[in-house]
Image 1: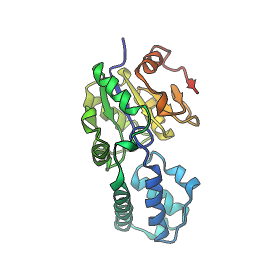
Image 2 (image 1 turned 135 degrees about the vertical axis):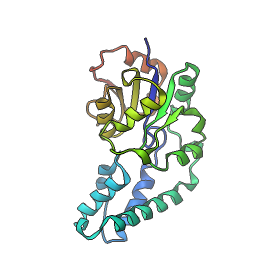
Image 3 (image 1 turned 120 degrees about the vertical axis):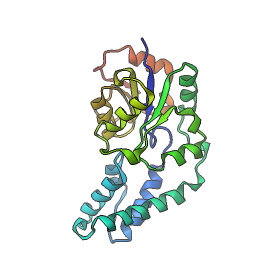
Length: 227
């Protein structure tokens, strides 16, 4: 028996807008007197907008100065900057191997889902011309808990009508890998520094259906490294 579904994270797996997030957060933080660099920004990978803001405020020693309304305004400012930066996004921003993998999965009747904490995910998929490729996309606004909690992947499985044990999740962030593993799915990590992924790849260019099928046939807790 093969897997019934593949559920993708968005940023760092389908496309890479991490640098745009960094630019938007850096500008927002600077506006309240907090400096963040690329090293600090790496801590924000894979977590929600409000959790990212909390870490920035803690980093700058200003968490006590901003109530819920003020934080909501800062988050909205960041998102507005990010949306402006997304204006130039098109199919050229799809990461290597992803278009081919989505086509191959569709041809085999394997369900395709998206599990992204980004509220901009629908707009990003539309800009990339990939909306029709996904059978189900989690509405992040309805989630109660963010990664590493498995809720987002369990919701995606439910939307695709597959059991977690029948699905593979693909992530580039440690919080995402932890969420996939906690859901009972099999995990594929993009990035050599990820811990606990069942299969670790250096690049999305290595992704293809035969590789996923070979991975599926291995023991669930085996961790493989492909360089």
